[in-house]
Amino acid sequence: MTYSELSVRDRRSLMLGGLVLAAFITWQFVVKPVQSRLDSLNRIVNSKQQMLEEIRQKALDLKGFKTEVEYLKTQISGQPNAGKMLATLEQIQTKHDVKKWVTRMRPSTIPLGKEYEQIVVSIELVGISFEKLVAFLVDVKAMNLAIGVQHFTIDKRKSASGALKTTMDLVTVVNVTRS
Image: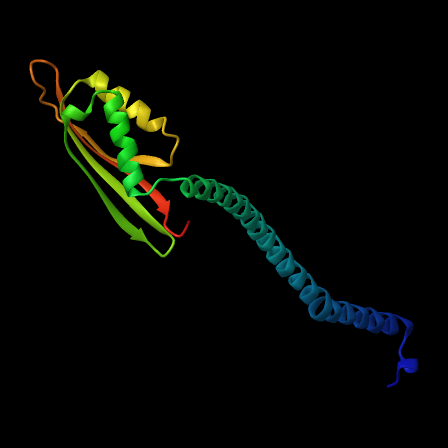
């Protein structure tokens, strides 16, 4: 039986069946894969946008760190070497009449690669008053150098006169390649 021999009702049913089949094939093999790919691409884009935001934030952090490093390099370029730092600390001790309580003041250097070295000055003060110790530390801070306190202890036991036993390690970094 040919198409032209079919009744109108059968032709319509056959045409409707063909349309449903064409719609199913179009949905299954065209629309559904394209929609799935679009969803996948949207997830990838969202993930990449989130990664981009993280990278931008890290770039801002890195820029801040770079600024801090440049500042520290300028501070370090003016730092005194171990001998000059020791002499400066001795001047401050003389200024505050702290020298008589110094029982030990010893510098040591630790290389930090080819360009820099760390200077540690260990100081032990025995019999110093709290006020003299604070005045000494205030002047050390006023040296306006990149200097830090690595270790600081005050012995809990003090004498009847209120004198303290204190040990501290003052630390700085210097550029050894500068002229």
